Structures are given as C-alpha cells and as structure tokens.
Length: 104
Image (tube, rainbow, N blue to C red; front, side):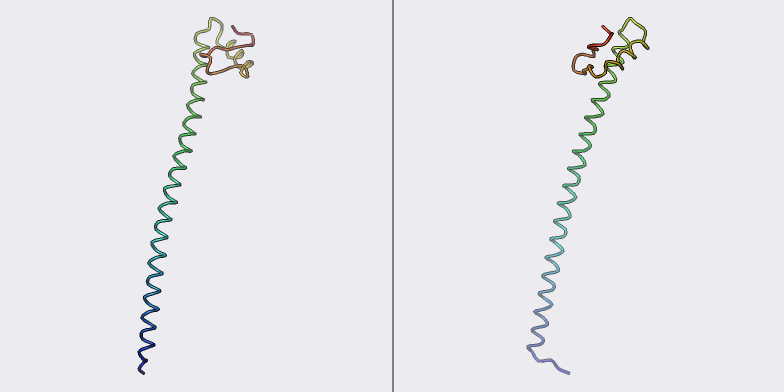
C-alpha cells in the first residue's frame, strides 16, 4: 500500500516536531536540574556555616567558664555552682567574668 506524498511529508513534519520538542524538553530539564543542585549546595553551605558559628559560640562560652573556674581562688565546685546560679547574668563578651551572684 502506497501512501500519498502529503501523508509522507506530514509524517516527516510530525517526526521533526516531536524530535525538536523532545530535545528542547531535555535541555530545559538539564538546565533546571543544574540550577536546583547549585541552589541546594548553596543552602547546605549556608546551613553549615550557621551551625559552625553556633558551635564556635558555645565552645567559647565553655572556654570562658573553664577559664573563670581555673583563675578563681575559691573551690572549683563553689565556682561552678556560682556560675550555674548566675548563668543568666553571664556574658561571653565581657572577658569571661561572672557578673552578679555571689562570685566576685
């Protein structure tokens, strides 16, 4: 069975259109995937930096408390209890000094 020339040209046009749409979709998928991966990496890096900053601040606070206990002339247990009781008045940015409470 022979198809007329119009049918053959129509089939070729449809195949070219489907191929073009397929290639366009594939490249759009690749570009959007790359952008999503890049954005995810940036968010993860930002979250890591925030977490690192929080850990650093916590360790600085612990170091300041340890330094305060080591420099005190009173019992370390007394100082620890004093620091625990005045932890709301404790500020890391004040050179590791305990302000308020019973300690001096």
